Length: 156
Image (cartoon, rainbow, N blue to C red; front, side, top):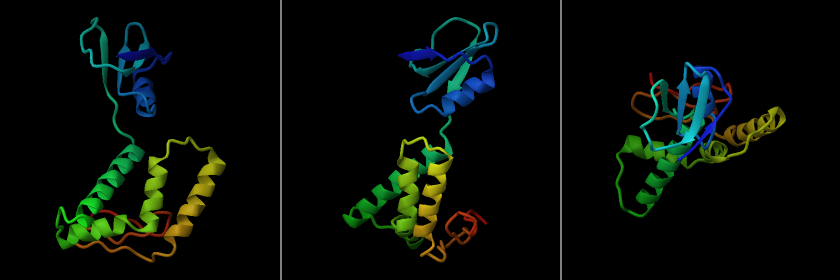
């Protein structure tokens, strides 16, 4: 168990802090003492007065998980271990595009970027994605584009 006192004196800020700390998995807050602790722990016993929760994954962490799952599906399919229906095949094919892989690289990076670095990363991402006019995924999905103002992607 590796829990640390954060110095945060608000329950919502305690939750927010844990959500944005790569090493945090759980947080606890004591209202009476205005104390926040966060970190890694499997010990659920303790003193009364503490409330907390499990870190909710950020959008970036969810994107990384999706990228990893789609890469694994692609490898299984290339190895002949799985056969995909056409809709799933289209998604796996799209996930191997340069544009999508560039987005995955960004999600997988642990770098904390300043405003200038984010600007250059977005510019580079747009450069890779401009070569793809539009992705079309069958079933109940709208057309997708680069995600940088050129259209939306999502369930109809």
